[in-house]
Length: 301
Length: 279
Image (cartoon, rainbow over all chains, first blue to last red; front, top):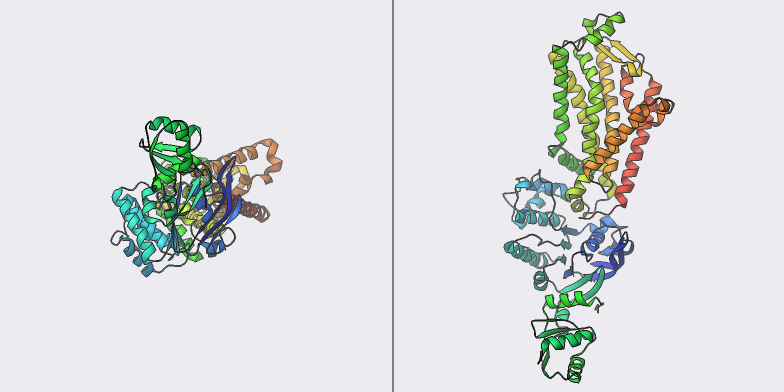
């Protein structure tokens, strides 16, 4: 559904996105992760033709976004963090305005979508009277109007309370199950991504550091439970030897890429530190994400 | 689709309270002028000029004369401010508010979006000129009798005296040509609005450009180069009150303004098309 090929964006001396090649298959809920300034929003901007790539190309549904904008974006809906509307107009008028940039939209279709997102009865009120949650629903409604096959969500949970987050999560699942949409979800909320996405890509400083199935990411054998006589000393030694990236809870270490547990045990024993237990553990997405952020080396499969 | 999009732009434009600041202030200014002319000796200066040229001044102390005299300061000072305010908002305000990002996630081209906005700006301009001229005449009629039209602008060497019928035709013609004046300022502000700047900055840039242009044009050294200054051409509508109308001068200025507007649009389109739209 989305194909990015060697996509690069340079803002002055800063490279916001660096040689990004990524494929989002149709029918997936795809998570795009990364720290603030990692290049997620810039990458999404390039997918939507709002930001011009310095080099490379972005395709949606096989159409080049820069050269075939109309065809590429015809079946795309997008929601951004803090969705902006014409606050002085009604919700209904906002939907009418935004939908006409895609295609003429019937009143029936608008009413249908208002009903789907649960805004019936409030559509005639001015948007400035809407709560944060209602604005989020209106944002969803405007994205749904053109009957998209692809929904791009850029930090949709930003600023929402737990109830709002739950609602967003349920909505994403409904979009996927009931409407069969492909969803690209860019988020900081790792638990949301962990619960929703089947595949993820992680960006760090504009570069892709991981792309693959979520299950694969979590089963990577680099979170290890380590029981030794002197854990801090062991960590210091292993860190100095560049065999681990990090430690946590006084009992876990995150192995550096290419490091095996046998090397860890050998090095500790050589230094006279008895090892009582070493066991690989399944990582949470948070563990995996943090280890990637610390490693800086490309782990893309 | 195009008409729907134009209607949308008009909804957006006329849904905002700040769009009406210009209409409201013009009405207020017109009525202030009427009160001043009606209840003070402000018209005496014009009376002396008329009588000095052998006309009976009382025949020309009319609604047509007062609203035509009012046009000079209102079209020269207040109207540019309001059209520049709306023109400066056209693109930059949407970019600032974030709604531009919502629009540009849809399959509409930037050129088309800008052309639609430009047309909406033109319709606003026509509306503002209508308020200025039609309501100006109606409000003046509440204070002054119907009668002949007297228009005097020593700077342009215009001294026009007309009976009521001819005067009304001249007033209507001047109002129509005033649209070119207002729309050119709107175009200038809209062009700046297409760059990556705040809406207030676009408005201020447009007004600064006009002030600098006017100051330079007024300097004796630049008199022989006045054709190169846009403010010289913006004043074309004054000549619709001249006897006879210097049509060559009017046509020359209209051509220059048409060229300037095309340039503003092209520069605006290029700037808008080239820029990145980010949150």
